[in-house]
Image 1 (cartoon, helix red, strand yellow):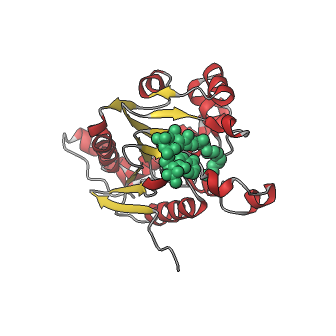
Image 2: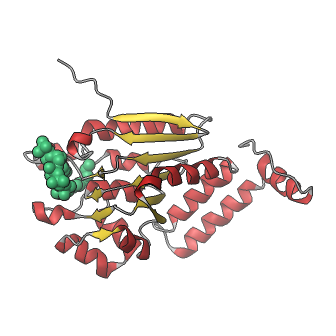
Amino acid sequence: MTDDKQLILVEIKERVALLRLNRPEAMNALNSALMIELMDKLEQLDADDSVGAFVLTGDARAFAAGADIKEMAEASSVELMLKGHISPFDRIKKITKPIIAAVSGWCLGGGNELAMSCDMIVASESARFGQPEINLGVIPGAGGTQRLTRAVGKALAMEMVLNNRTLTAEDALRRGLVNRVVPVERYLVEAMQLATEIAARAPLAVRLGKEAVNRAFETHLADGIQEERQSFYFLFASEDQKEGMRAFGEKRKPNWKGK
Ligand code: CO8
């Protein structure tokens, strides 16, 4: 018998694609089938001009409680390397449109690494962030040690990775891991609202702005500034730059074309 349950549910509203992780019975643990389906859908919608931004969410109890421990438990190193457990994480970096994680409840291990691979995080007051891999005798394997350290600093990242310190939503806000914290009833609405606003903006500028900010984590300052400058010059070759600056002079709203 084949299991044809959809692991990712997709809804499109006003240029925003909402993707829901759909394994509530397992706290949305990220098994390889779910990760591959997620990346396939992100890539497909990234190529769709009717979509301007993404919201990625789980449910109120869990964004995702990590990689699927049951699936991984008996894997060999070689299987882990060759099979689709971690490699899908490399695909999310290539998505050109902004991705907002809407996080409620548990956001642990690979779940936290997935949220941190998004561009922004809107958290509900019940969100809890952690890297509990140490409890399983391992360490984060999908960028956790690197992205978390850049987001919250070395001191706190060490406690989280070495001693399973969990952050409340308020801690996460204070330490710059998330953009905003809202009541549980509002987290998805707020994330959708933010994504809808961004999706209505000049698409090329949004794309290059996302790319430039993300480069700040990956390159030296001088190189990042140089790349930013090239993107700035490049945008002057777009119709939207002319439209945006003319509309300002004419005191009207710009009509973006994405060209
Ligand atoms: N993997 C598999 N199943 C899980 C996971 C998980 N990560 N988390 C929860 N579940 C399952 C439980 O086994 C349980 O299933 P069942 O009903 O069949 O027993 C069901 O979800 C509900 O969970 P609980 O009964 O445990 O619910 P509680 O409310 O008591 O506890 C917790 C919630 C605190 C979230 C608890 O489930 C927990 O500690 N989960 C594990 C968290 C964890 O250790 N995460 C790290 C995993 S390792 C990792 O992420 C490494 C990343 C490497 C790269 C990424 C590759 C994708």
